[in-house]
Image (cartoon, rainbow, N blue to C red):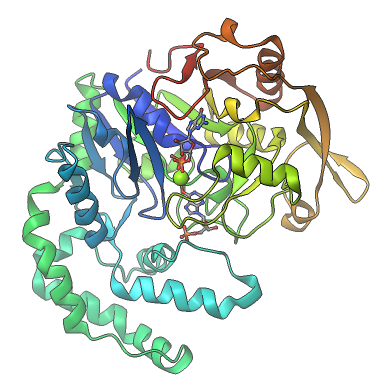
Length: 428
Ligand code: GDP
Ligand code: IMO
Ligand code: MG
């Protein structure tokens, strides 16, 4: 099983970083295929805690070749900051490869992200403010800057001029901000070119060759299914394809090469930013989950919204991604609850709806229909086999597995690297 895709099956922060790290000592390459430094993956290795944003989590494992694919938007300053911070902690970052076709996040994308959010007022999305949406908008509008443009000053200047022509009118006349000088942006980008040059490669060619040679490649998704620009809760989404199809387009590897699609779910649900969230708890149970699960954003530090497990969402993710295996994380967080509600369907205007409604308006006022499962009070953080779990915890996992559309192959019982129960091998 050489090509393994890891995707978030809810609204992000499911523990994708930990899942990648779990596989990392058995893989050769790890590819980030979508998003940018809006992602935040926390990986705990021994007494060391790492927060990764732009770099794929597999970079922490010696010998793995990390790749930033063409589907990523790269803030180069952030890239170098992250590389410097990791190498100062002894992580070897020298093997990183960056696609020549990846797009660049510049100063004007960050500025536009912030001003457009402010102007949306009550309708704001709650973006991470990293310039992600404006950079992808430029890509689709065909006025984006690609990594390879940094090596041709004339082309770079022309493209920055083209991009700023309209944007400066917007910034000055609509948003009341100062115009951004072409020279400033060009110089800024050119300043990174020589340091970047050795990392830049035809990553699609390298990855295809690696797969042909029988190497193992993990495609690590940022964000998640419900934040996907096509399949998520639009417009309250990110601007890329965070679902499994994005692994193919965002890396240049054909979809028929993808062998295994691993969906990561939390044993409950969280969301950062605005948008519908049927099982959200705005009471002390929600506070309890937030405190117990330490649910604060890795990127922006914002408190995450919290709620119970939503089975229709997991089934939806299972379909949209073609999930072969789920990894369920954070089961330990639920320890101590007398009963645990799980959303099994929704009530939409008095009608029972078993699947995620296609109408966004319906989803906005879908009321969860819950089934209650008995909880457990034993500490499960030391469990390493399914049989080590208390009977009620086993039953909770099995019930969720039956409702979620794919088997649950691993269960997280704590943030540490070792705190995992593997039921089915995720690589072979
Ligand atoms: P990602 O964006 O999907 O990689 O997830 P984040 O790193 O943003 O958020 C997941 C958080 O949960 C991190 O702080 C992890 O260290 C932590 N975590 C992952 N798996 C488990 C688990 O099984 N139990 C507990 N208690 N924490 C976990
Ligand atoms: P990881 O990879 C959770 C959310 C933002 C906002 C929306 C759009 O750590 O799971 P953007 O800046 O992407 O334009 O913001 O998407 N969002 C995330 N939420 N985890 C993430 O990444 C996210 N990346 C973006 O909060 O609602
Ligand atoms: Mg995260």
